Image (cartoon, rainbow, N blue to C red):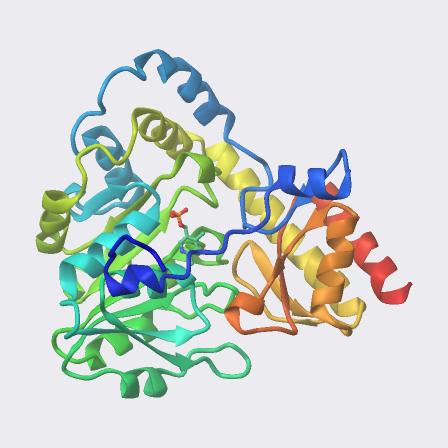
Length: 366
Ligand SMILES: *Cc1c(COP(=O)(O)O)cnc(C)c1O
């Protein structure tokens, strides 16, 4: 059909399906106000210190960033109490995930394993790299079945992906369980633990693997500024890796993928302790509120350690989603995750949470 010849994996490529945008919905339904609770963005917006840094550095936009973003790496190293050499910043954690797959897995030979459902970027970037992507179901309660995951792996498994806390369920395990998994993996496999939401767990120290990466050798961690740090639109994430792997990524990454504004905003956000604490308070109390209210409306609610909740409404999920949308409230249907009956809502601020609950009440109880 096309006169252009592209590689087979590009020909059949199914792009990432992003949540709906506010302007799309305003236009479609003729609404002036829209609440977006679909993409797990920060309910308090952008850190004021980060916003100020962006304005201050706007006049430097004509300059290339300093190669390797050394200032950001130093700030992150002290924030995380890890060696600076272990840190690689990226244009969102998506970039780090993509680079690791391309750097580690041989097309047509190696495979990558994960649970199903999982964050779609793992599958998309594996397939784009020409690497087989294998999946095994989570348990019905969305918990991790390690034996089933291990049974999926073999001598050609080069990477195993795990999201902790998980998306879309919010399920979370302690680091000790993951360390045990890492000890049982085939010898060539690298375990990537995606900690995009770890800052929202009740005890991040017990959950995170950042301090264990150097000792374990076969574990890498990715994190992001998109959620807790409120910078999703600037695209900033990072990997924490054993030094040797970090050196390889630094060699292959595009030289300026983290731009000046993202770097300065990231540094400012790391220093904004007030914003961090406030976000935690708002999300943890909002999560409790929403989970109680949803259960009260007859929804099954999955326990979440994250800034979102997965729930199954007592009536058709697609219908509920569309009715909310018509009222200007965007949440996330989970059809693309293979969970047709369920929905995911990001924890908003108090006002957003209340508006969402009252709209849902109206839909369910008419
Ligand atoms: C939101 C999210 C990310 C963040 O990706 P960025 O590219 O850093 O914005 C990573 N992993 C999961 C599972 C997520 O939900």
